Length: 98
Image (cartoon, rainbow, N blue to C red; front, top):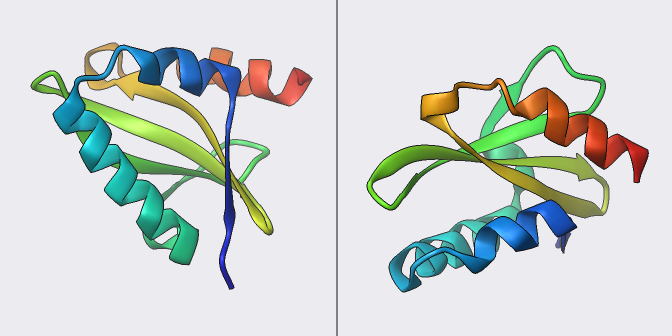
């Protein structure tokens, strides 16, 4: 089964500022998501099935957060590890309202 990738507005805004190398890595990860979105780490403690992909953005550890609502994979946001997961609640609530 091939999954359809749907980015949120939050994700698109964050992705605009990425450098070329990071965008290429991100595209490779998205290709993997299309084939099997369940391959990456699941996050617990949320109403949604949230998953994370570890990335380095501008030499800083970050996470791409997404959810799977079959047959769609919805790209929610990027989280910078320095902020831990403090911003995740805000992004998830914003996603759930839309």
